[in-house]
Image (tube, rainbow, N blue to C red):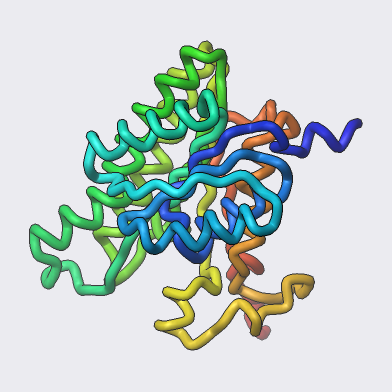
Length: 257
């Protein structure tokens, strides 16, 4: 088996929410392997340094300001990608947001904001970029969900509901687009030492030993590795799946007798 099947070299990939954390790691990983990368975020000033860093390391990157909840902005993002690199091979729907609140304290605006960014943003980007993929002969969509979307999430019910929707969308769309050679898959991370998690839990990615098996918190590069695999020919038989990456699972312990 050739290692080329595990490479994204020559691809063009759009990565949303790429200013930091998982999205930034995915963009940098793809670029290091030879892909053209389009990084986007709601603020141009947040993604310019990411693209500049990739180019400084010899990679190819374009930074685009894009609010994934704005359909026209998403259309402009895809148009800029096609104009710069000629097409779209992979879309990584990483843009997301969350906040903690009990269900009864979530306002209608709060609910709509979280659902719009996580779920509706995924809808916009996938529908627009997917049109390019289908017209050009195929591609790969990698959605980012969460374990919160698989097993519930107290005090984050809005976020969990949106992420559950992404998992269902992945399965449904994978079936619909299979005839167009567009593979749709999903990643459901557990706790990952992103800047957001660091601010809440005080755990930095530098504190995590990536080679240690017995842990329940990961680093962004571990999610990037999965995203890259899902974008390569090596995952050609993986369609409509959600890969859970949450470290050591919680299990029932044997009771004392």
